Length: 114
Image 1 (cartoon, rainbow, N blue to C red):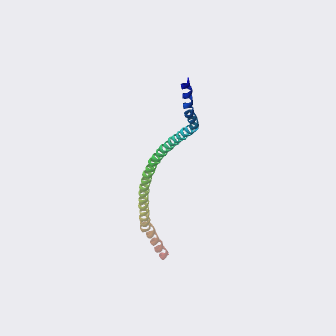
Image 2: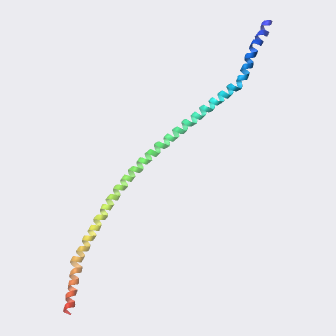
């Protein structure tokens, strides 16, 4: 019967040490669990940021394409406006040469005759 009492005495210090380290072990596991959770959250944030960055990159390229289209349209419209101004100048000169100048000359002759 001495043997069982000796075994109890021999395991009692280990059990005591295990009880002393149990809070440390729980704390260590809790810290590791928190670190894993933080890593998971960081990974989700990175994935979300990458998705947003990709979407914004596509939107930027679309906007740049649209800007190029609009710049081309502005150039075409400026060219048309310049041609229209040239035609207006040509028409004005033609009106002056064919209508106004002869009419003024005719009036001058009539005033001289009167």
